[in-house]
Amino acid sequence: MHTRTIFILFTITKEVYFCYGHRLINHPGKCRNLHGHSVKASISIEQEHLNHQGMVCDFSDIKDCAEKYIDLYLDHNLLLQKEDPIIPLLEDNRERFLALDEHPTAEVISKMIFQHLKQSGLNVTQVILWETTSANACYRES
Ligand SMILES: [Zn+2]
Image (cartoon, rainbow, N blue to C red; front, top):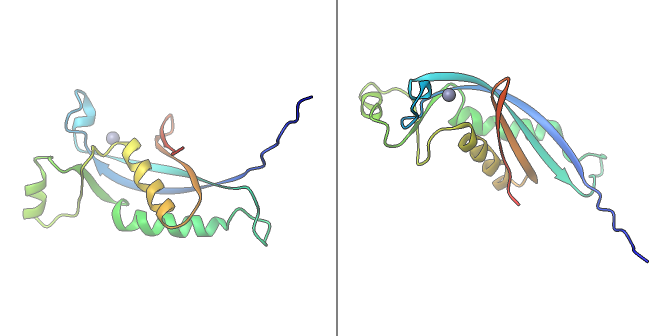
């Protein structure tokens, strides 16, 4: 006789929107040019048990946590890999940018958001960054 264990898991997803400029310096095609994206990040949080309000957590807690980070580092910023040769020019002109160790792809940006939420104590399971309406990158840890 087999016994089946059922695992119960609740997942909620909150979407946040922001914009950034970037370029991928090693890309062979048009992504090597400076350009921008207006993106959506879909953030999923899960819990086995609901809180006393019957929630995984408040949607506004996800929004506040994500937007605080996004406003500070990503939104309307220029995201560049730290070896990008345009950086000295931006520094000379006191322009805002964020230099990353990794290339500023949708994959890396979704990872950055994920790690911030996780470090903030949210039980984040995945962050999907929609760079266009037909293309997204997902970061999760297991
Ligand atoms: Zn791009």
